[in-house]
Amino acid sequence: MDYRKLSKTISRALRHAPADFGLALDEEGWTPVADLLTALARMRHQWQHLTEADLRAMMAQAAKQRYELRDGRIRALYGHSISQRIQKEPTPPPALLYHGTAPETAVIILREGLKPMRRQYVHLSQDVETARIVGRRKAAHPVILTLDAAAAAAGGVLFYRENNGIWLADFVPPDFIHLLSSP
Image 1 (cartoon, helix red, strand yellow):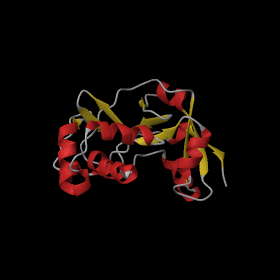
Image 2: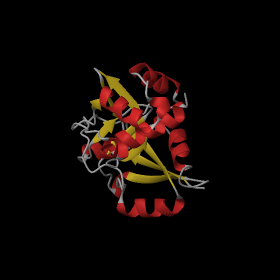
Image 3: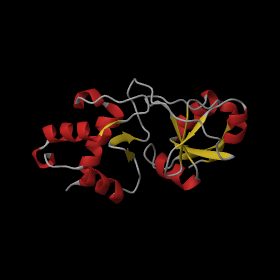
């Protein structure tokens, strides 16, 4: 089983294009596992006999936990680009959070704040190393920004905790963002 290919397909189905798979997500992003398995079986012959156990095996071997299975339902935890807003539960953040990005983007962020862009939420890291890894997707030598999350929360910014040290926010104003390191 090519779990990487399966995970990428499920990511597209649950995060970006559920309608293309004939799926409907509820307000928290859940869809029945049976519906997802049916959609996957239509896509590839080798996926005709997938089960929930296969999905659990895919999740267990992944470095990052991107999905949640519960009570016969599955959802992507973060990274949605669909127009339907996935509801999250606000959680008090740690004092500091981090964001890795390209140097040219950092200049804009420091001036305008962190915006979700094509995603539903801004993605933040709980530690510098994760921010650096994420930032390398945008630049070989990313800039790391520090967010005074405690002050931002006190100022009304809502934060949402995900897994793997990932935090989400709707928007972070520039007043709470500072340059930690540059290339």
